Length: 183
Image 1 (cartoon, rainbow, N blue to C red):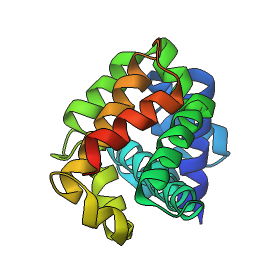
Image 2: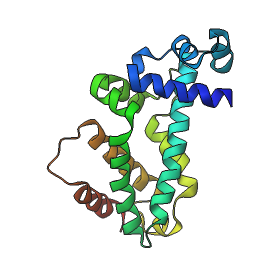
Image 3: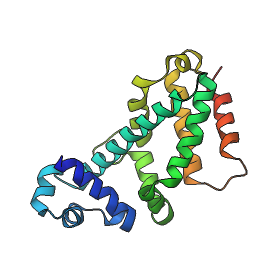
Image 4: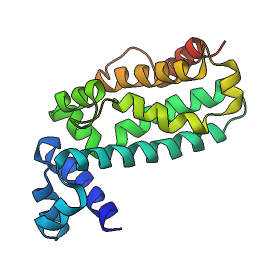
């Protein structure tokens, strides 16, 4: 439980001060624990960042499942997921702080992963977490295959997250994703 609390505090530090301000020392200070406790829990900043990313991806996966469950057809499930994930991104305080003030931090995590040891990117992690719970009806109609369709969805959403100004509404974007991923 202490680890989860430190992850929560880490997200709070990012929300208020940015990703560059995230350190085990800052998290320990804001959590009211000793630095040694934070270092025992995580070992270093990279492990803390990885824990934050893992937790945020798990939370997103639960939301995606809920948004899919609200609809019946694969097309409507994907549409609902895209529209809702875009709203979720816009409302996520830590993510919005970093997007506004430290976009290079997001770009680095998307391209090379959330820590220096990881070979998988955030995109890979999202797909890995979501694949086991993918709706079977979507898996049957996804083109060219379920994993590639999921990857395309995530990459499109991240493109719009990084460059939010667009002539498209969320619904138009969702329709385009449906056309691109469902055969």
